[in-house]
Image (cartoon, rainbow, N blue to C red; front, side):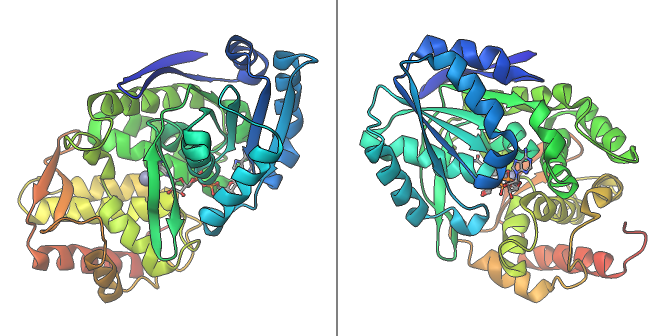
Length: 373
Ligand SMILES: NC(=O)c1ccc[n+]([C@@H]2O[C@H](COP(=O)([O-])OP(=O)(O)OC[C@H]3O[C@@H](n4cnc5c(N)ncnc54)[C@H](O)[C@@H]3O)[C@@H](O)[C@H]2O)c1
Ligand SMILES: [Zn+2]
């Protein structure tokens, strides 16, 4: 087991990474917190596979006097919305959950963001424990306290900062995660690699190169990502100092791709992988990075896109329209670019022609098909 500490003004907490945590550290921590009732938020699908293990751990921790109230909602980004949040409030109210109790988010980023937002706002905020079950959520969304839901056509438009009390990334649950979801999470791992950590890039390559990449050996990778995320969040919790903004590498393009393809078509990590390729191309054409940066991205990221559907249908014009309508954008075009691997830079006022060119180049490259997986 590895332990990473997060230290922010909004909260100081441990992130535990390891196999079999639910039976160990998790029980210990719940006992220490002594809630009377635990609100367990998850998807029925995750609960069906891993719920029994979770309930056994909670039973052990709470003893006969404690109880668990479940709130399960349907999976998919389309359920990360205010209707789900309201149903969650009602379920908590009916279970008599108050501010001494604790909410446990048990799932991927959709559960984590939604459950975290419920915890941030129910009775003006109750304690939240994040128990991520996807690689994406373990390396990124469960750490750092950004919680929230979507409005129609506007991703993450409503939200809060609500740091969890603790994060438990039990690698055992990843054994049931579909391969495509694993690859999507691995794209986010590659992001930390390109931004900060050469060794992580090698890990991603090794992982992709295995014939049947699974959950084995993931503990170190997840812990390394947690260290990076913890450091960044510690320096810039509220995303105002330009430090946390670096984590948006590949995301300006990526979010546009997700929207253009229609939510649910591309997985978040797939869109970010293509987005990082576009950012690498743009870094080259801006004269920031040496040639070769794009090729490194392509070699490393293409295997993660093996199951990406419609990869030849991405339309450059449409993508640019979505990028222009991105509400989060300030006055000019602002991108995280690389001067080279592990040398990120926030660049304002990127010439529009170069952005267009990068988009068209990558779309063309993807269209050409070979040697894409
Ligand atoms: N708050 C943040 O800082 C932050 C950062 C990155 C992403 N996000 C958000 O995270 C979301 C994406 O999260 P995600 O990639 O985890 O997707 P997800 O939560 O939709 O999970 C992916 C799928 O895997 C299933 N699943 C989860 N765990 C499983 C397991 N152990 N075994 C089998 N199936 C399992 C889920 O039911 C779901 O169908 C997006 O909404 C994104 O906006 C938030
Ligand atoms: Zn992301």
